[in-house]
Length: 107
Image 1 (cartoon, rainbow, N blue to C red):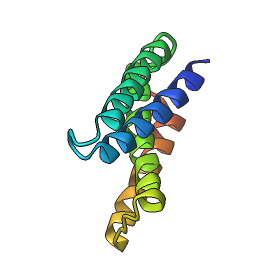
Image 2: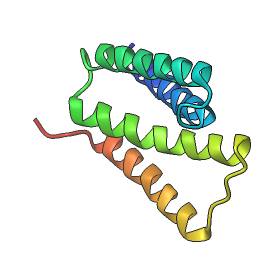
Image 3: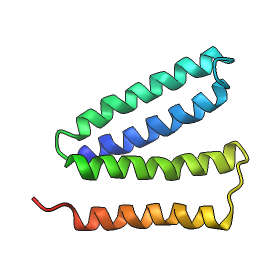
Image 4: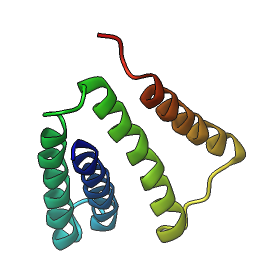
């Protein structure tokens, strides 16, 4: 169940960031408020995931996967283009997440 909460955190936070981008600062108040709502929902589900997951694993997984999801949203929805070097660094985030979750942390 903890990973389901963590997945919800990633989705809520990524959607919230995309909405904040659409808000264009304070220009579009409806996007701003909806984005802030999604970010707060993400914090709520993240808190629930921490009941069962180690803080280090949960936080790095959330942060890393959010980077990947936001990059995909930026590419497909906002027509952001990345260089080969940027793709390389994004892939390192993915490899780091896989390695961290496979090895866990020592207690």
